[in-house]
Amino acid sequence: MKKDILSVVLVAVMLLSCGCGAEQNAAEAEQTSQGAQNAAVITATPAPTIAPTPVPTPTPKPNYLIDSTFSVVCDDYVNMRADASSQSTLVREVTNGEQVELLSFVERYAQVKVLSTGETGYIIGGFLKPDTDVLGLSAVSAPFGVTEAVPFNYTYDQMLMDIDELLVAYPDKLTVESAGQSVEGRELKVLVLGDMNAKHHVFVQGAIHAREHMTALLCMALAEHWLADGIPNPSVCFHILPMANPDGVTLNQTLQFNKAIQEIYLNDGSTGRSVLTGAEYLSEWKANIRGVDLNRNFDAIWDRVKTCPAPSFSDYRGESIESEPETKALVEYTKKYDFDATVSYHATGSMIYWEFGPNSPVNEASYSLAEAVAAISAYKLEDDDGSSFGGYKDWASYKMNIPSITIEIGTRAAPLLENEFYNVWLRNRELLTTVAHWVEANAV
Ligand SMILES: [Zn+2]
Image 1 (spheres, protein in one colour):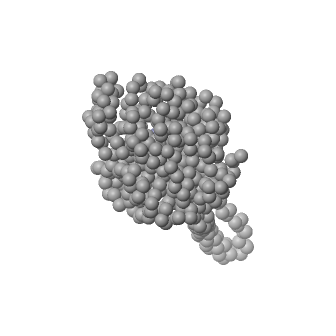
Image 2 (cartoon, rainbow, N blue to C red; image 1 turned 180 degrees about the horizontal axis):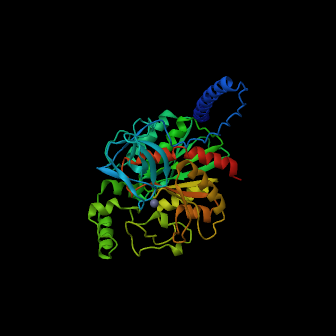
Image 3 (tube, rainbow, N blue to C red; image 1 turned 90 degrees about the horizontal axis):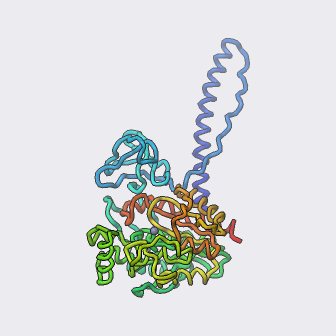
């Protein structure tokens, strides 16, 4: 089904290109024929034979380009710049509600053409909303319909309800497992798409950082997209853990202090780690409910993790490697299946991390996977700057020899606003297809 759609799109693109070419050739032919008639009157010599104009090879349209115009959704206006950089010349301000055509994505930016004036330039990609519903989701509660830039909370409970809907809709294609439990006892649900006995297995996880919970919605949307397409690559079984840190996500979304969190807040305040008010502080929360940054808690040169000395809203590595149940659950689940690749979703920066500096044995393969994903998402490939250790991706590649990447989806700071989801979706919706093709071609 997916392939059929892709074929149709490709053929349409080719037809479009051929059509343009044909029109151009016809125009040339008309001119030539007039020239030939004139020549016939004056000199009576035969018209010269014109070599046919070669039809250019059509460039495949990036699959994030869709048949829809877009509206800018922001508070007041956004800056449109000459290049994809905040340092670049200001072309104009684009006001809330103005319609644009999307031309391309470049890292955090969308290249657009303002419909009313024809001006082109670059705006931050997270301000664009398609004018038609392109999400195509029925079970997963995605936010299509917003007209304002407002926070969006995809909750753990909503995720459970959406998983139930998917189970009803796709009973033969979806299995749901638990990888373990969080500190507060929430099940770490894993959606297993397709055949457990498939040749290849791939792990995708989101929301290990609490404030990056839009990645959980993205994971769920990817699962529905793949199921609705009928598991296009049955040799690849995807295991999707949308919310690796459900307690932290819930704290971030509800902004409700308990006694232990209050103590962490006061300690962060007294040590100068945070000067934020209570609600602001919780909206910045990345850690699990015990104040441990789960993505600093894995056995990947943990000794060198830049850590603070005590539980905090972010960057505390924990008392020991795998001290947290969520970390342990991810480790055990990863060891249980012989994964051919892992993808970790994070939210800040529109980039893909592929490298684990200290000679991870699979760096080359991870780079190849990252390149494939960059081709569909227009995210920037980012080298390891040697300052980050103890993450899931680091451990999966360094200790488990699994090609692994981290994808940062957002164009602005987390928690991402609701209007951010459209560019996120367009740039990631073919993630599973892309990874499946990569695994089929590269997994040993
Ligand atoms: Zn993160």
